[in-house]
Length: 300
Image 1: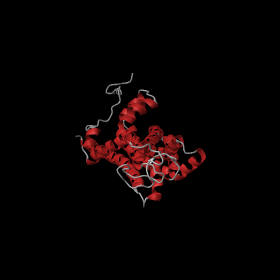
Image 2: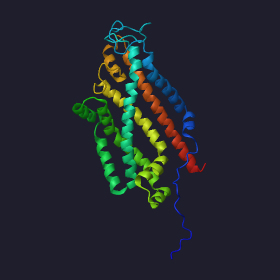
Image 3: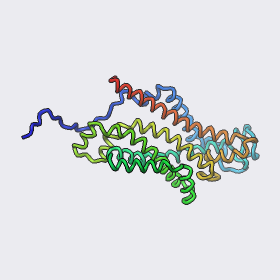
Image 4: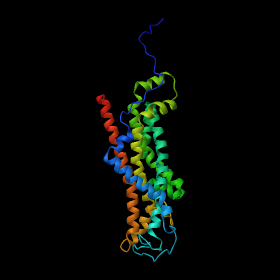
């Protein structure tokens, strides 16, 4: 009979690396986090309450004299069709944030799952997935968008599919890199020895230990996605007239920017405000992860 003295049984529940300093408290404690949250709250108010605060219907032609400068009745003036620019701005924010949010979430779900499973499996599976990511990363994003939109149209589903193809490999590579450092830990080996399934190990062992990195990557690439989708609308490949989408408003307003620049300026500031919000939050989360890693390494 073999001697089993000194052998330890694998732990019943895999540990999660502790984050000694709360993420939210750390984000609020940084200048980037406070500014990002304050700016984000302002943009949320504009997007959520904007439609109810708009003085005119966003697509009402002839609300005022075409290309009217700002006045008491039209705070941002009117566009070339006499539509109230302020009303269109207050109604256009939802399409700028909702579609990119859905699209980047789909891209994260696809790329993240593939990246984590690739890191966990290793070997030939990891090599094939990595080469596939590399192949997709070579494709120019705008070329992918042009091909898909030319063949399938400009519907929301096509935009989501385009974003998934463009950003899933980028997200997958980053999340795979974070997961590689976790799969070598003893608690993952213990879960394997207990006979846990791959899905359980990914959900309960690997993912909880990279959730901070996933949040940082998600916030950063949401910014990229917002700008990308707004650019498609600006080029006429996304939202179509008479939509009040901010990207489309910039495209419409550039023709009259010398007469009344406020349509293009307001929409540009709106896109910039949303983008800067998530950039600051991503930076705050990244700083938290760096500080937390340094504290753990120092044993604090």
